[in-house]
Length: 89
Ligand SMILES: [Zn+2]
Image 1: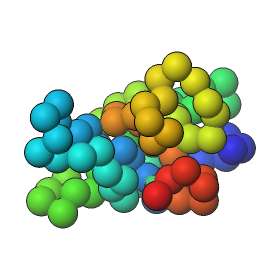
Image 2: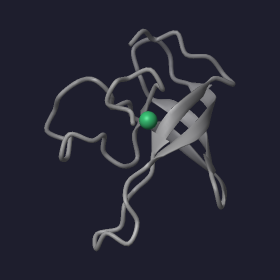
Image 3: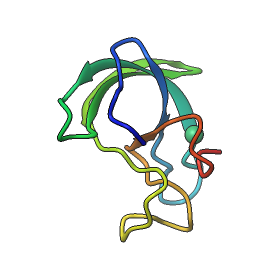
């Protein structure tokens, strides 16, 4: 993933699932509203849910990299990735 993200670009935001599974963690479309420089992959996002929009700042990237935050091979809730990331959907 390169760091050339731009304001207005669409990425995927991963919603939080509920602990008892009423809602599962899902990809949502999100518009980039802020970019935190080349050293950070954190983005500010306007998340477009079917039920409405909300705004998140400093959302961490989680896509291709394996890591301790990964749960069951899916990106963690509260993170973003690109539509092109193979794990995205
Ligand atoms: Zn996705």
